[in-house]
Image 1 (cartoon, rainbow, N blue to C red):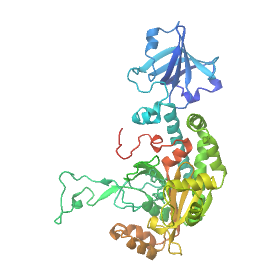
Image 2 (cartoon, rainbow, N blue to C red):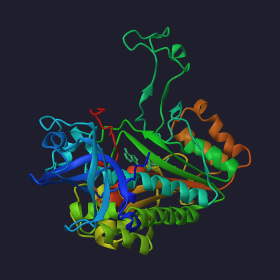
Image 3 (cartoon, rainbow, N blue to C red):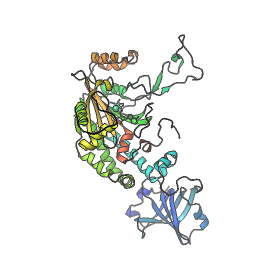
Image 4 (cartoon, rainbow, N blue to C red):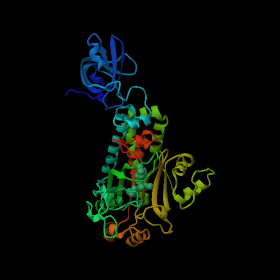
Length: 462
Ligand code: 4AD
Ligand code: MG
């Protein structure tokens, strides 16, 4: 196949040669002498202009070229006289792969709203906006692997089906093969899970962290990167029921090492996207958010502010600002509080540490004050929490006491406790919500627009 991808066609060395391109028609315009087609093949935000001299082609041949049709064009690449493009193709041969009926094809050339496109998630990757977002998403995924692999971290695949609830949030999707209309019962009337596929209750994972700790305490440093499921009924622009999470876990790291890694990691990813997706980011910036590029550069160039939860609460209480939810030491911060600290008070990313133990998970290292744990949340402009992590409790007795206090069933946790029984080490890790990173880098405002097929309460289309 002699096909040239459109991303490679703007190479000046190709001018004068015969090229073959394949793609989907974005628009066609012109008159009875000449017709212009804008063609896109997904490799870049840029279209290539194809010029059809109507002495060579018949009206009948061109009639099939409507918005959305897939075509194969052979022709000469020449410098363009028109404005808006450097080169164009003078068509010599045309083959239509597939037509797109203008009466029914939903993506006509006028700009569609993001809401409309969510209903058309099967076709929206063919729009400029979603092409750009999906290319940025793919590039960020690659940057993430690069970052960790360059630093000697190993990619560990943790299970998606699990019998343990890492975050203790209790918002898990159950996995079962039992017939829900005819459940087997035990003598006391409960569902008999011994008859289920795995012989016990199982669910989709909310985090790979606990298994990640097993990897870190053997390989030294690992990261996971996979789908994560949460059945919380939160219908917000920042929550998905199925999202992707990156969870590095490192032996011999304390909370400061953990914060340093998190900061380097995000900066690396943002910088990588700026270097490798500039056309797409510039397009999104122009369409949706004029400040996007400045905001991305700002994050890369400035230190994140680090302070404790207690200090953060003080600032919020002294801010004189009326929040919807009151701020009290001991309560979890709401998105409005996080965004106040980041966007109004410090005007840069913030890492909050040492949260009250009651609002954080059982595995976090307990501070000597008896009230706080070595948690860290990274808070970002526009997003709020982008990373959650902690140094882990390495002391067997303290961890066991906390597990008992919280009433976590011991029979589920024996394997996890073994990491503290045998060769226990200080260790730490964090989780980055991949879609929240993509949100930040693309400047989009709804998380449903940065994953190809979003799953949210009452929505599992496509
Ligand atoms: O703060 P979370 O719940 O932390 C954990 O799961 C830890 N086990 C991570 C660790 O220490 N290894 O989730 C981590 C991140 C959040 O900061 C957020 O970016 C993202 O995951 N996240 C979600 N993203 C989209 N939709 C949701 N429903 C999310 N819940 C969390
Ligand atoms: Mg969190």
